[in-house]
Length: 465
Image (tube, rainbow, N blue to C red):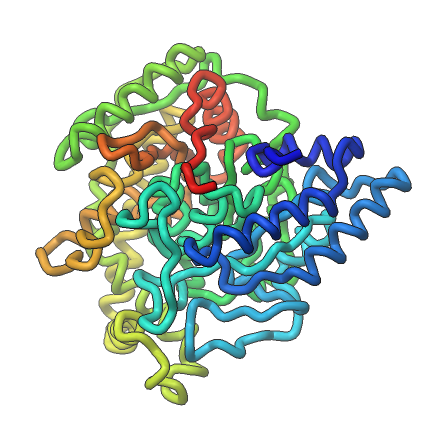
């Protein structure tokens, strides 16, 4: 079946597990597609061909005997290249950490492996999961148009998922790194509640801000992935003990009566009109599905945005403490700068940011007393060009503007889902966010799924084959 790559994760899983197609057939097709297309797109840091072939054969053998481990059994998948794999390298987008390998799987790797998932390989990322790719590593290209930004840091995850070079992937989000690539590449990404997914043996950018989550072709696909990777973990004491819902089983619950808040001025002040219009169109779709739309006032997030870099930098300096001084010449200038920011941040300033963070979380919690979720942009402007991103930072406040709708929800630890919402005049994808209180992923996925029943933006495929 030549069009197998066009199926969603849940669709191909059904075909594999009903034995309409084999996992080997699907995996071979995906590997061939990677070989044909990824020499230009550069979304994979490492293709784990032999591992994938063995896992696919093992899946067919088990399924043939009547054992189906999970909805992901036999499905080809991509891992962001900071999730440790015992049977493959983990480079963390770095030259200094090319040989970083704890010798074991990360917890998310183990959970996916136990679910019978097929690992196609490790997906390219920015250096250390920060803002830019290492100067010696070729960045992935946006499959919609190579002149446009892919989003960071889960750039390879966004590109591979959009280009149909995997059926789903993992990303991480510290300041927007699941949601930026989802916005730019036209895929669905979910940043779960902080601690909902274990970070054990996933190399950290910021222990207190990092979130691991799914990136896929639909909200339903994200539900299937989150169902596998979420949960407590003795290897990560910060992983939440809360029980894990059957996200995919409840995806069709609908949103009739769900209260969704919108702050229209927040979604329009300093925001490109095409982005505001997209958000308001999404509001109408959700309203048509039965959601109750309520006005809200989004709390002032200025300090969260302006001090995010300082706060992240302190954690980053700690994460790289064993490596930085020994390998400083192998670090790129941007990540090196962040580490120095963290090293120079005083304890008093760190405490000041933490106190403001607590205040913001409290203010945001008050908003969620009246609504189940809020809808906001993912970025204040359409997907930028690479040329624009190359000059980002030259104008004062430009970086803060970029992260203004994403960083606050990393600082708050609240779940946020980015959904494809249309295309700009150059036919580059646009995305918006639905954000909820902690542990509201089930409702966010239901809202995203409801939206995707009445829209087809998530079904659009870049013309690359």
